[in-house]
Structure formats: structure tokens, C-alpha cells
Image (cartoon, rainbow, N blue to C red; front, side):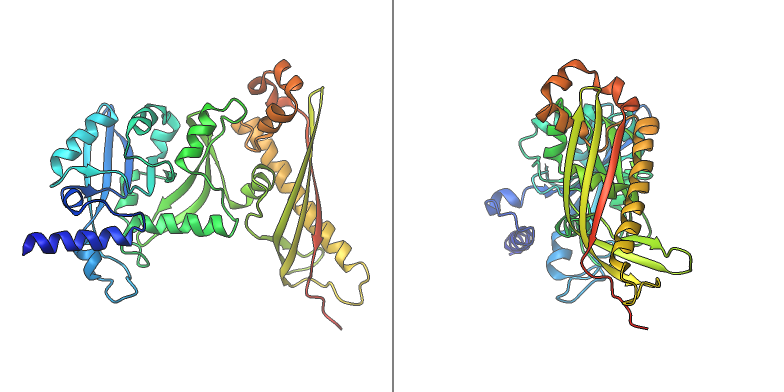
Length: 377
């Protein structure tokens, strides 16, 4: 009876993952890993995994309760840790601590501490590539602090903590506010000569949840810095042609704010033999909030708003470009990929890593506001 109950609980849990089920006999003998965290420890590595408790998930227990499946509480998942000089050695120790052999086919997130990310993630990629269970559609994340701490967070909106991170990322991708970066795309970026600039999601764990801090920027496999939400807007406009987050602008000459939300992005790039690059970005959107003094009696209201928003975007883009060239020394815009694809003659004659930091690059914006909420006096 107990064996049948255990099998039934695991079958229910498998269905909740929405990724298909294996034979019951196989499932009941595996501990399902949904997230892995990698930290530095005593000259080697500490690897931690998050394993859901099927009984708690199926019953809705652990403090959340109800059909809505609120917070799972501390009993909803178990966190195991192992240490070793290599990833395989640490996972071997993990296997010895778990009741059943670990199964990595349902992993949703792969977490690196910032210390590990700055040292380089390439040593772990070989094991991940070779594992037949590791799927490519998971999200690589850099944690501000210790990666294991992120596995111990108990957000109130999800029974399984790592699903909070997954759902935050996926909702942002759907809304076109954050970059769509999966593990598979990281593999492509690291092997593609026109890319070599992967970006991982960057989070800081808190008591009851996570703070999204933007994206961690890499030079090949080593983290070199970060970009926050505001800095990411021009990068996402050119790199992926997606909208990014709304921007807040101070009203000219008076107190108050204007909030603009982009809806449509178009980009164009021109590169000369110098080499010199000119980027033109056209943005269409709407004003969500208008505390400024633009009124229906002002015939130039739309033109003024368009110029105000365009200048704000251009200032941000110039600051990010300066940070990329002089600070990160990394082409976060991925102009190099466009040059590699469409300007092969220029690509062959230049050393991108050496010439990008001093390459003249001009970024111009044209903004078209659909509505601004004009007020009649």
C-alpha cells in the first residue's frame, strides 16, 4: 500500500511539471532536481541541489495550503550539498547523501555565485554538455552572494522556490522586458565567433523572494560586470529588437514625471571601412503617465514629447556605450555579430577585441508617441 501511495504521489508531481512522465518504476527510484547552485569552497566547489518533496507538493502542505498552491514552506523542498575539486566529484558526494539517485532532467535554473562567474564557468560546461539528462532550455543565473542561499529562499507565491525565478524570467520574456537567454543559447554564444558575449540573469536573494538586478555581462566565459534595467533598454533594443522596461523622464522646467512605454522597435546599422558604426533605432509607444504641462493648446506637444523621450534614450545609450567600451571593454550590443554576418570584408581585416574599445559608434533614436494624454485647460 505504501509503495502504491509513493508511486501515485510521484506521478502527480510529474504531471505538475508539464514535461511528460517516465515509467512509474523509474520515477520512484530518482530524486528530481529542479535547480543546481555552484559556489567556491576551500579551493574547490560546493554544489547544492534543490529537490521537491513530492508529499508536500501533492498535498499542498508546508504552509501554503489550498488549491491556489501558495508558499510551500520549508517542507516543500530539500537542499543537498556536496563538495569536490570538480563538478563530477561534488555531484558524486551529493548522490551518496540522497535517498535515491539524482535526476537532472527537470532542472529549471542553473545558479552560479558571482565569485564563480567571475572566475569562469567553462569548467562546468563540459560536464553539463556531456550529461544526457541536462536539457538546454533552462535559465543560467548569477547570484549576488552565495548561490546556495538562493535555494533556501521561501517565496510565498510558489511552492517550489526555483519556480519563482523561472516564472519571473518567463513572464518578462513574454512581455518583452527581459532578454531570452537559455543554457542552449549560452553554448551557441560561447562557440560563435560573432558573439562571445553571453549575458546571464542577475538576482539577489532576500528573505521572502528575489530582487532582479539586470543581467551579468560575460567576456567569453568570465563575468566582467552588470547592466541594470535602465542600462539594458538600449541593449535590448538593438541586440534583440525588444521593448525593455518603461522609462521615467523628468518634466522639462518643472516638477513631475512622464512615463513612456515602448511598444515597437526597429533598428538599422551601418558600418564603414574606418571602421565606424551608426545605429538608428526607431521606437513607437505610449505615455502611461503625464505630469508635465503638455496640453491640447500646444500644437507642438507630440513633437516635444517625441524629442524629450528620444534624447533620454540617447543619453542612456551613450552612457552604456561608454561603459561597454571603457569599463567592460565588451560589445554588449553585439554589433560584432552584425559585422560578422553582413560585413565580412571589414570583419576579416579587424581585431574586434582590440579595436572595439576605441571604435567610433553613434546611436540615434527616433520616437513616435501614439498618445500622450493631452489635457484641455
